[in-house]
Length: 75
Image (cartoon, rainbow, N blue to C red; front, top):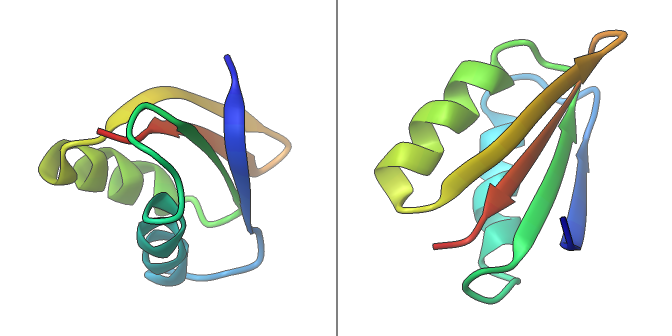
């Protein structure tokens, strides 16, 4: 997977990880992959719902030691 940009949203509470993700996805081109790193457990359901409603694709989600990593491909 070729990551174009990484967004560090660790320590941010809902809804800030999604707010920052929306802004960051605007800065990459269609087809690019945005890596989002967050510590808010709510980000998992939020990002899943947001990618479906916004036309982007959530390629993969990982969780390790309370840190969630999401890979979002811009639609």
